[in-house]
Length: 277
Image (cartoon, rainbow, N blue to C red; front, top):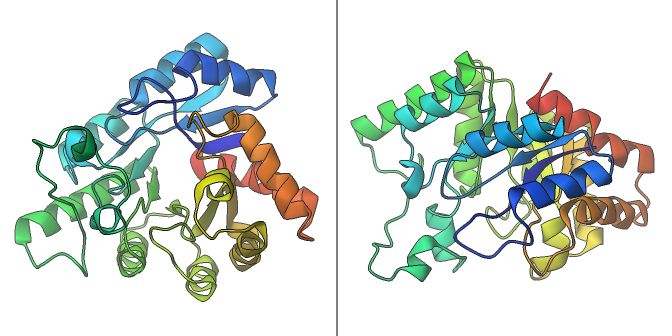
């Protein structure tokens, strides 16, 4: 299997293990690789080192939050030129993160501003910001990288998907669209999946999302169809080890009557095709 969403230490918050420890867990579980995600910095260097040491396909990328430069073409160019494969639009610094009361770096450092990041249609018309977004998208298209929606709102996700298609981006992933942010409906998710967007469901949602059930996640899976991506989004000390979390997600969804082989492919073939092939 191949996990497109995992967190490890070092990080600004506690994680269940360091990079090498998490990598060893994946190797022991027979995974072919994973995508290492950090909310505050590029993970490309860390991922490259893990790949060389382990022989697994370990992939890095960048989340466009303020510590990494925000929606910054220079940060994206550096990430992609050094071998990064995944770009997440704002997560911890998205305006939705603030309005939902989800964790932010400014929680740890109150002296920091609580300024947030957004994109159209939320963003007021600003020529410089629009140019930056356009160049970021052009770079992603040029490198045939993966564009993830991060924690943007549903309206922003739809706008970003339209922009991605117009610029030739073919690797587009809705980051856990049924999570608290962006809280998209099954109908909205099905519409974007039908237009070619991949749809992520994470094990984190089972463990930590208020009100989420395996039955509700099964509805999202059905809406995603052949665009389904199952991932762990694990790494928290109060979650199972990431490979175990992803396997548990598959088993929970299987118990909801979904085809086990399809779910397995959604945690192996689909994510590898999205990220690597």
